[in-house]
Length: 169
Ligand SMILES: *[C@@H]1O[C@H](CO)[C@@H](O)[C@H](O)[C@H]1NC(C)=O
Image (cartoon, rainbow, N blue to C red; front, side, top):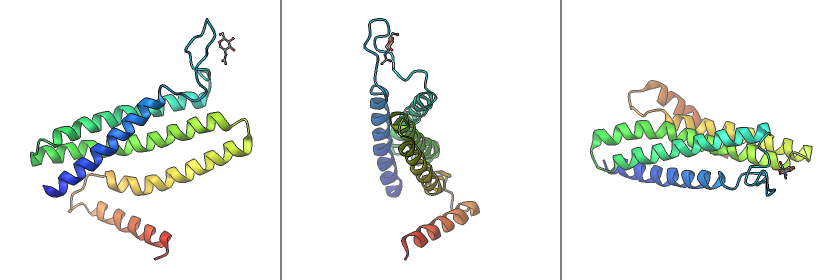
């Protein structure tokens, strides 16, 4: 129980942070807003495909982190069954929120720098490399943990092995 408490509180903190930044990003969109009379307040990059991706990723990240946060608040009531159900719901949503937030970041940054082709490509390459690394360590974390789950043990063994290999220990 003590073990779960720490986990619930940490997750709640991170989910709140993700909800905060994605909410703020929706009001400071890349490219800013038009200030002419007819189109006052309309995003200037409205017709850009990258902007559409930014909007979708940002919304999904915001909604899933809010739902995860509410589920984790239920978990704080202290009932063990409730904690386990809430974690099962919150962990995948947390993974979705983090990866969608990263994708919104990549899309937004790419939008603003892609007039300079090499910089745009660099942003995309760094972003894709980072996303791949993130998914490798995030997916095993988000699979519902049951000690008897052979797959879990199998995957986490290789993830830890890769991390050790990468850090050269
Ligand atoms: C703002 O809207 C006006 C009217 O639709 C348009 O002519 C102008 O190009 C827009 N400005 C920007 C920066 O998108």
